[in-house]
Length: 153
Image 1 (cartoon, rainbow, N blue to C red):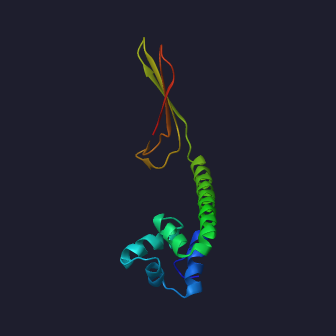
Image 2: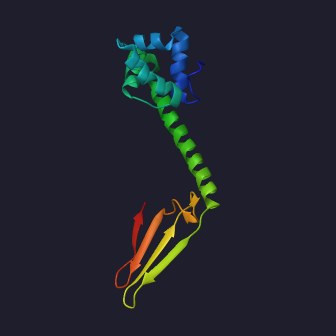
Image 3: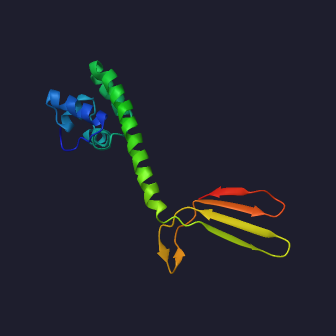
């Protein structure tokens, strides 16, 4: 596997196609019909390194290598599943990290006739002069004679 191929199934498949034919990335781009090599590389390299990119190049690969078209389609679907699982794992880790800094905050103010209550929930990212720099995730507001309203940052 070349240095630029990532662990994603679509990257591994493209890299395998290049290795089977002994192509460098430039030769592979030329085999797809690109006359402008730079443009072809700009479209191919994201698929090799990140498992995503300009979709038209996948159609060109499928047209150039029709015997691998179904395999390419499966590899793209598997790559999407892997990327979704990685996103979920990162999100869970972020939630765990934010759980340590979570501080609910309730602020109530008003006069004799109007009461306004605001509830903030979220995680505190940083502290500056004792005040949260970024705090709100969800904002609920209630005013007398009205209903609860919700805003998201």
